[in-house]
Length: 169
Image (tube, rainbow, N blue to C red; front, side):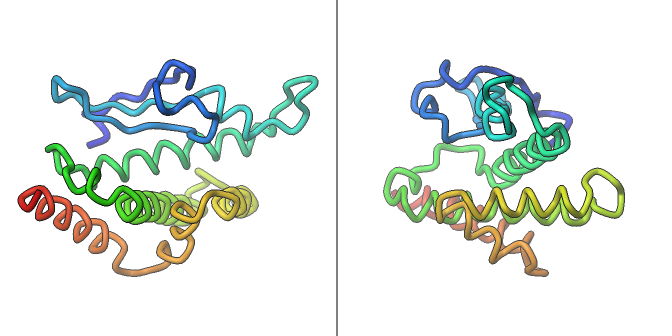
């Protein structure tokens, strides 16, 4: 998946429906079948800014946040059915709750496993956990899931539910 999905930095304001400053990134499958991840540079920098007057960033937090967003969006790609998600439009609240919590859980798990490999420090991981705690409930629930030994199975099961839902709607 990683080799086949490019990552782009862009300004959030260019993407309809994503211009309210709440989103840090976006995974999408385009009409031509290509897939991409877009990181919203302005929103990520705003989250990592600790002195807006001088636009000073906590560089470690900025880097860790970028990693978190990339991994989160790749989790969406892993759960993508590669077909139109009809279930998404039928029950968008459930869809968003399950999809976003699993994506956050996966990102937290990968980052936690990376502490020993120096991708992220323990204090950096703690800041990312604090960030997730500040997110809306559907994202925050990832904190309850990431320590599960069955996380990958849960992601695959969710993908299967989406495939089955597509058959029904």
